[in-house]
Amino acid sequence: MSQEIFGIHHVTAIASDPQQNIDFYTHVLGLRLVKLTVNFDDPGTYHFYYGDEVGQPGTILTFFPWRGARRGRPGNGQASVTSFSIPEGAVGYWQERLGRLGIFVGEPSRRFDEEALVFLDPDGMQLELVAEAGVESRRPWAGGPVPPEAAIRGFHSVTLWEENLEHTAALLTGVLGFRLVQSAGSRSRFEAASSEPGSILDIIHRPDQGPGWGGAGTVHHVAWRTADDQTQQAWRQEIASLGFHVSPVMDRQYFHSIYFREPGGVLFEIATDPPGFTWDEAPDRLGTGLKLPSWLETQRVQIEQILPDLSLPEVITP
Ligand code: ZN
Image 1 (cartoon, rainbow, N blue to C red):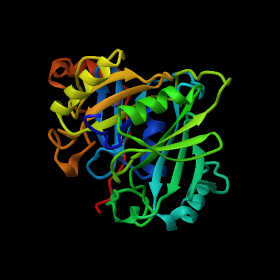
Image 2 (image 1 turned 120 degrees about the vertical axis):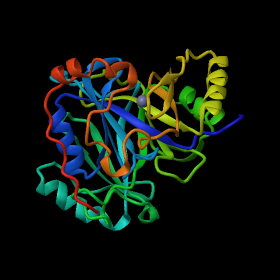
Image 3 (image 1 turned 45 degrees about the vertical axis):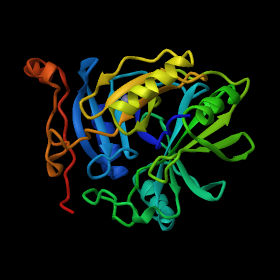
């Protein structure tokens, strides 16, 4: 093994209503909209990026909001659950907040030694807030409606649902540098070689259960962090040499990406930490205007005509 993955870079999912999606993730969950752009492969659709103050790797949840998209179904071969970290003392706050805002949330579930609040986004996407020791020291986005002491501190983990555990586990531990740290019942926990946000991946082993299908409320792919273009090239060669079909490097403007499917069918991406979200917008202006890559800038007028109008979140000056 020549190198190691640091943890989640971003998670990208599908939504059915752009405004509803913005309202939920900024107003209810208190994330920052750090970039408003389009799907580069389908520029008539928005691409929203939410994260902490500057959208650091490990905090970024992104959506393709395809208007009227049909709901998908969670199942095997998917990243079925996306989990955020919250401070240990914030579980009661969130239980009350979600309930008050009309989100169904039950009593906290316990897994390994952590408490988790389990709920759905407006498209039925499975989310969790996990109380994680020590995350208070991570800087939250303080310009949203959630008090900083309770605010989300980036990702805790993603949970894959898999028909077969062995093949995915072999890729994680034998190639990507994860360690198997705990298992109980059908859940196995893997940890990347860092203590930064999003260093955990859980697998729920669900033999003989059906595959999921993509659509609104499902995760499209999970991106893992790598340091730079050079390490990404090394990953590309190593993963291709194992027989996986790996995409060419794609310029996503805020990071560079390669994609491949892990053995259970979940689409994985490896994304570079740089350049990040502040190269084309000042940190205090992030997410306040539609950004287009240079190759789409000449079509801005037509693109803006197609995109639905949006009411953007109000930023409370921290
Ligand atoms: Zn991605």
